[in-house]
Length: 370
Ligand code: NDP
Ligand code: GDR
Image 1 (cartoon, rainbow, N blue to C red):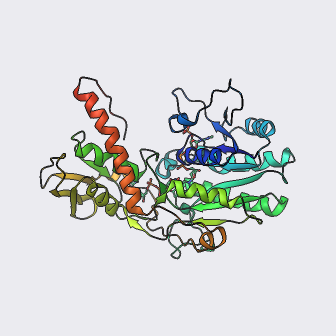
Image 2: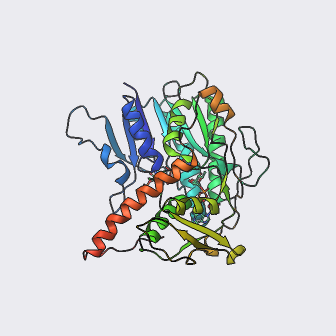
Image 3: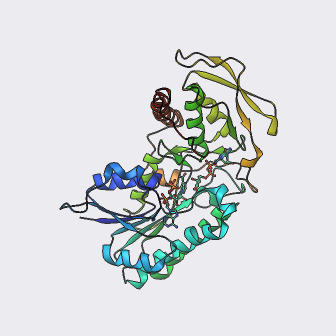
């Protein structure tokens, strides 16, 4: 039975990958951070009581900033595959916490690679590094492929650039099976609430149900190549099953503006939104409302720009070229953008419909930070 160790197991991708590997018969070990509140919501349905026999999913406390901890866990587990998904993954927040981001996202990867060396596991343990389309940053050429030059535009992307190259270097220097998956944006109902897609689908649900007035966003012009996380974690697995370790772009090859994602999401609940104005004055207005359950007034403003969400340096256009992963890995996404938006909106509507019921029957709900 193969053993996998996943850092970032409590995140969006960690949750989907854990389920996927358990279904493949793996024993899965995850590293979770200590937190003052429970942080295992996304993997609770996979939890197995450690007191039982034949437990296939085990959690270890740890942190990418602590090499003693990483060495100890890897020594105990002796994994066949490590998936390094742990990271401070929010681009905007990385401008506020640049040093921490460099430590966790950059040096954290080095710590794992060094642990493999220190423990003499170079020939046993394969490692997947969660690289990112943010490496391309300021547009050099499109679509972006494995050979497009990098030009990172945030402390997050610069930290991930270090992680990318240290992975390549340890592969070349020590013969470790170490690979980068250069993944373009991927989303799902499990996406963190402050990334733009989930922020939009949550707001659409709340606005339709009368729980929120307007949605405030930053750059509506940014273009992203959005896929579904379920498809992308399969690519991670495939990358570690090849004969020769290599780096791969994982993307759909289709790009969409933030503004269009907003329009599509509102359309899912029968609300047509039209954008008028320019720059910070651009706003989205309801032009029709056909769903019997949602009574939004025509002309109501539901979207506005708040410059506080602008980034000091922005990545304007991402569109990936997945030719290599399509041909070499045989990887093809099953979801398109329409299916992704539909699933995300439906899940959030369902969630907030329940919250509304609780609220109407006298249960006080505290609003979350957005
Ligand atoms: P999430 O933000 O959902 O999850 C990040 C995970 O990393 C969480 O489990 C988090 O723990 C954990 N983590 C954060 N800091 C540390 C630390 N110091 N030590 C150990 N664990 C830590 O990210 P995604 O699942 O979306 O992404 C997975 C990886 O892929 C990340 O590395 C991200 O940068 C990268 N990536 C993501 C893309 C995307 O579109 N989703 C695209 C390309 C790359 P906690 O739950 O406690 O916060
Ligand atoms: P990104 O994702 O920065 O691409 O990084 P995010 O969803 O945060 O932003 C996408 C684009 O939308 C614009 N935007 C806003 N973004 C947020 N978060 N909130 C807003 O209100 C808002 N308004 C407009 C952004 O400016 C940006 O252009 C994600 C993360 O998962 C990274 O970890 C990963 O490496 C990359 O995707 C690929």
